[in-house]
Length: 182
Ligand code: MD6
Ligand code: FE
Image 1 (spheres, rainbow, N blue to C red):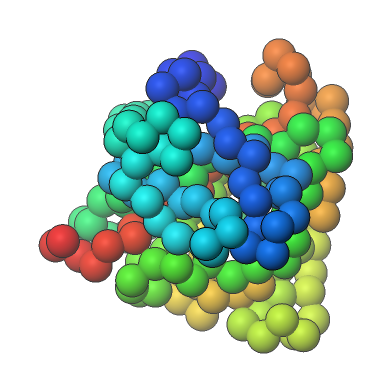
Image 2: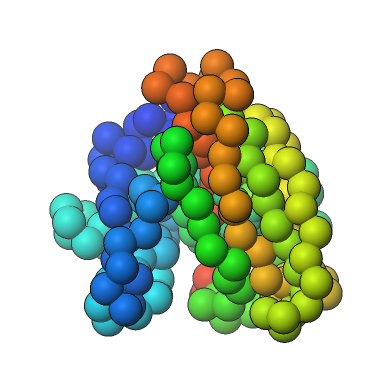
């Protein structure tokens, strides 16, 4: 699967996303599938082309689609695989994934490389949170009531895995952006 991610990044280079309020994110991102998730001064959204190359995103590799088929409990395929790369100091603030059309579809996440402290709460930002360590190979599904739970990454344990030659962590999140049948 790491080879497949390398070929995605070759055609759709990792970007340093900028939040709508002008702060660079610490995570590097790219995508595969019909839609890629992007953020800049114009806000968070899905786009059908890479913002730098102008090209469509690469297809989602079969090795990654297999994970969705195994756990998502829907015949509808995902149309976005967001690829996040965390280097030593990268983190991701508490957020909800809610730019998709139908929250009946889950978000399926695959963690690779260094372990990370994942924090998850409820559907209100102020709800109490719990932390869990995501290790390389872990698959996490957020569906049903948890679909709109706030979540984020507090930190990674840099060098805690030897999977990636330069260290760090990759997280893949598979989503269905468009409604079923579109
Ligand atoms: C991460 N994950 O694990 C960030 N979103 O690096 C997410 O933001 C996420 O793990 C939706 C569903 C599952 C996730
Ligand atoms: Fe998320």
